Image (cartoon, rainbow, N blue to C red; front, top):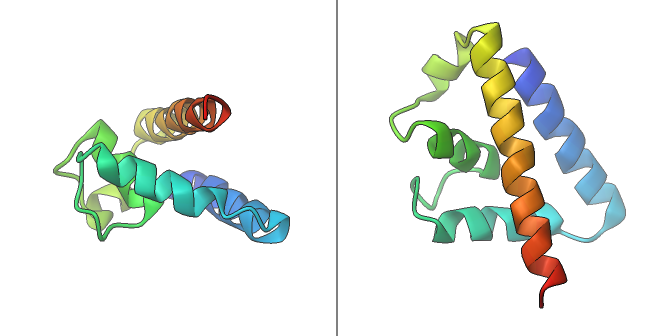
Length: 89
């Protein structure tokens, strides 16, 4: 993960742990059902697979600023979609 993307992911994981809601576990399961990446990946890995299923960790470490921005934007777009599904139950 790149520094910026990793910081966003760490913040979300920390917030999730402190809130006790396990939202990110549900998010991971939701992403897995979309079948864009291997189900054993972390939620952030599945987010990256939404952008490009061929990405590897070594690729992410060399992301350009534009790719970092795309990854963070995709993360929040997917998270919004997931949270909307929770509200519709």
